[in-house]
Structure formats: C-alpha cells, structure tokens
Image 1: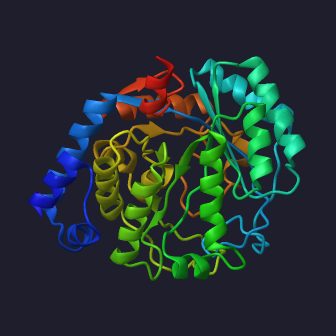
Image 2 (image 1 turned 60 degrees about the vertical axis):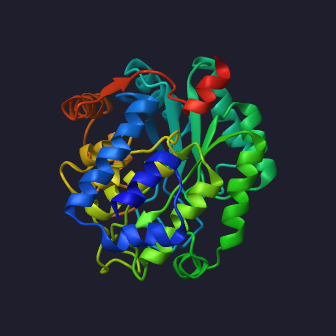
Length: 350
C-alpha cells in the first residue's frame, strides 16, 4: 500500500491493478499517509491558495432524465425557474463586489438558452468584467455551439463524465450516449476551453473497478479541472431511496486524483459539505483547492435541487462568501482572489 502511494507521489502514475489494490485495502493509517502526500503535492504546486468561483444556477429546466437528478425532465414535482439576463448580470455584479473573478453559469439542458441567448449573456458579462473568467456548465451541445460560446468569451466548460463505465452510464442516463459524452469533452478541449470532467462516488451498483476506470480516464483526459462528489439521493427520483456515497470514499479519491494530476483544479464540493458538516474542509485537506459559493438569488436556490439536503440554500451571497472564507482559513488555507486558472495556463501567460 505505502509503496503504491509513494509511486503515485513520485511518478504521478499507477497501474489499474495498483489503483484497485488501494481502493480495496485502504485503512485509517494508509488513508492518513495518502492525504499527507496529496496535500504535499497541492502545497508544492498551488501553495495554500484556494480559488473561489461564484456559482450562478440560472435554470433548472432540463430535457434529460438522469436517474439520480432532481431536475430531471420527468420530475413533475420540480419547481421550475429561469433567471433572466438581467438577473444573471445582477449576480455577476454582486460577485464582482465580493471579489470573485470567475463566474460559473450552471443549468440543466434547457432549450430556451439557445446559442444566441448564451452568446448575448456571455458578451454582456465580458463587456462589464473583461478580466473575469466565465465557466459554463450546460451539458451536451454541438461542436459548433461550444465554439460559438468560446468565441463570445467563455473560458472554461464543466462537463462531468459522470462514470467511465459504459454499462453504468447507460443505466443511469436513459436515452443518452456514453460515446457522445466523451466526444463533447474532446470537442471542448480541441476548441481551447479549460475543461472540467468528474464523477460521482457511491452510485448504486458502482464498484471499485468502476472507480478505477474513472481514475484512468481522468489521467488520460488530463482536464484542467475535476469535480467529484458523493452521490446523494433526491427523493423525487428513481434512486431516491438508495444509499448515498460517503465522505470517506470521496476524500480517498480526491487524494488519489491530486497525486495522479498535480496541476488539476480540484473542488471541495457543496455535496461534500452536504454529507458532513466539515466535508468541504476535509476535501481541501485531501488536495482540493477550489470552492464555489453560491451567487444565485435566494428565491431560487432551493429549486435547484439536484439532491436532497443541499446546504447554503437560504444564505445571501455575502453570507456564503464570509462563511466559506472563515472555513478556508480555519483549515489552514487562504483565499486567493484571482481568476484561478490551472497552473499550466498561468505559466503560459507569464
């Protein structure tokens, strides 16, 4: 076990068999060693910096029917909403005042937000805040759509691959294509986005072999960002009564990802904070270096219910900002008020 962790630390690589051995056999002592090594690497590459992203959840309409998601098209109990362009710009104004240099525009796959609508929103934000980064998370679109939004000024795109197991992916995403999901990530990379992939931990019927596939896929893809979090059931979905993923398994995988990809931007997700009061702090200590406080208007936050028990739905943006900075500082890290590009991109610009 320790030999494999040392190999990961020194070479940033491991075989399929070695990764499976770690996931099958890790215990409290070896987990502590893994976290120490992953933290050493994040300190070497990024220091104590934690980058903030202002999250704007601007629509909960979605044409997809992912089995685990609370905003799936077939969930008749979802209270649907769309933010206007003016709403989104107001969120951006608040975010800029709070020091955020990246906005994450996240929503379901909502046909209302055509290329033309998105281009107008992107250009409007960039006109006011040309030095701030825009990250999009809008699901699967065509190469042409991604390219148009990139040319309009979008900088990054988050598209979790969800799982690298074809069978598991297709069971969880009726009517969706495993191959197209991967093609979208490849397209985004070709166009020039900083890309973010990622997966859920603790899905029903997910095995450690499946998680190893995720790790190997992430290593091969080499994204600028990787968002992982525990599966949390949502009561109005087909998986609403299933058992959720754990903080322990998720932080183990965060540590391994940091060792495999030293440069990656690795969020300590809201989902981690939703399964444990100190979940985000544990995520940071396992190698995480990004946190995404919510800028969405409080009137819609509880409607963006991807899963149950989501934290911070009632907090104003300034409360979220102050709360998370305090948590980051108490964990031994510090807020970095910049765009927070991947270190490879930062070096390009020097």
